[in-house]
Amino acid sequence: MVRALAPAGNTVTPHRPAAAIALLLLLGVVGLSVANPSVAAAGPTLVISSPADGTVVGNGTPVVVDFVVSGFVLVQPGRVGQVVGPTEGHVDVYVDGGYAWMATRVEPIVLPLSSGPHTIRLQLVDDVGNALSPDVSPAVRVVATHGPAGGVPTIRIVSPVPAQVTGHDVYVSVEISNFTFVDAHGQPNAPNEGHFELFLAGVLRQDLSRYDTGFMVDLPDGNNTITARLVNNDHTPLNPDVFATVTIFVKGASVSVLYQTLSGGVAVLLAAILVVLIFRRRKAITRITKARTEKP
Image 1 (cartoon, rainbow, N blue to C red):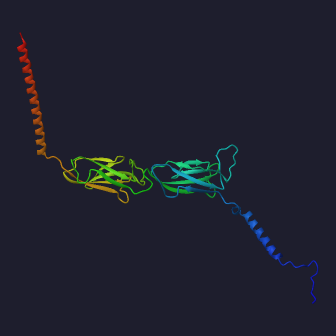
Image 2 (image 1 turned 135 degrees about the horizontal axis):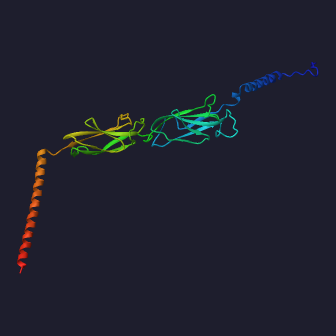
Image 3 (image 1 turned 60 degrees about the horizontal axis):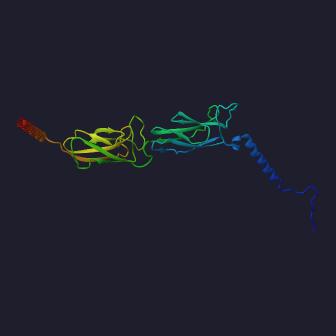
């Protein structure tokens, strides 16, 4: 068998087209990266790691904000010879739209907040305080309260007890749980804080703030139902409504009984005075008689 031999120097290389295509693709990717720097390097980021959105911060404690920064260097503004750049600056902190703090290091931000809902926003800015482009400013909503952060509020009347017989004036003491009494001065409502109100037969008689004891006067004779209700800072009932009731019996002395009591007391007093006078008279007579007897 005779085989045809290819001339020297004309050897066939079947993989050369594939290598050429791969080289073209590589050059295209490199060119795209150069033309579009955002593909090569992501922009600065700022993330609020805590608290989570909607967190209730209880017991009157400050709100502690933790955050994470990437692609950006936090520095102190106003340095000698500083050059404004797009990847360095600081964090401005806003509470409910108002400026509250400046952070130049990644460390917890402590914010004492009044009762009620608040919006906390962090913003990356350059050395002179300009917002970045595009803007980098995450936000989180929290609710601050002097009450506990969780739990269902309750109220119980501990005094007077049911069916107790009292006079026309009576002290009312309550016991609460998962709730904190605060003075109402127009602040927003907040979970598990407020005060309580006392009602007699459904009619408001007292509005109390920091105290767990009220004093009700001039109760009518007979059965009386007292209601103690927990309310918000704006005096509205909680949702769901939280209240306790007790029925007592008021029994006041009648006019005739009171007159007889006073008359009896006066008679006893007069009798005591008369006995004292008689005793003193007898002592005086004895002293005079003795003096006359001993006189020479």
